[in-house]
Amino acid sequence: MAQQGNFKSPSRMGALGDGAPASSSGAVAGGKAREEGLKGVDFERRGFLGKVVGGIGAAVAVSTLYPVVKFIIPPVREFKEVKEMVVGKASEVPVNSGKIYAFNKDKVIVINDNGKLTACSAVCTHLGCLVRWEDKDNQIFCPCHGAKYTQLGEIISGPQPLPLAPYGVRVEGEDLIISIV
Image 1 (cartoon, rainbow, N blue to C red):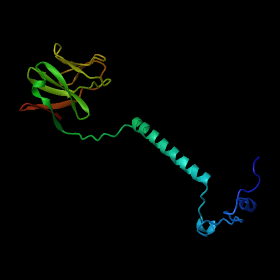
Image 2: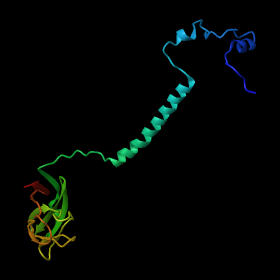
Image 3: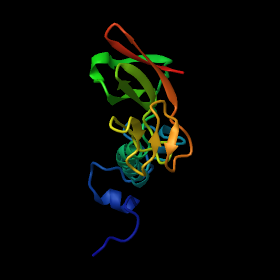
């Protein structure tokens, strides 16, 4: 049977035995009344546990969402654009062939046509495909839609709207240097 009435009622406190005071004045062991010792503090067990559970839930939510947000939003890369850069060795581009190098945010094709080096963007202006050097035709060719360019990046035929951007290229010692024109 459930007990009726107040848990700290004077009759119940008296029934507990000699160790308990007969009245429930709210006094604590230090002799101060409970109301004086905890002025302005609402410290109930249910409120405290609610705050602890809420804090733990917030910590779990943050620790779960942080990696998801970092995955969805890529980090910002700081990029320093240079006017010229050593991209490799001159011997890496054999005679009558072309090789693609990364330069700033672009890809550049360096063409060695019987010892004459030229460079232009390796990204087709039609759909952004990478072009290649066709030695038998002596032209730059885009395999996506058949766009054709001269060795200097000028349009020969195809659906591309603009010519390829030109770049400067020179050899110093063994180094191959690409520069903005």
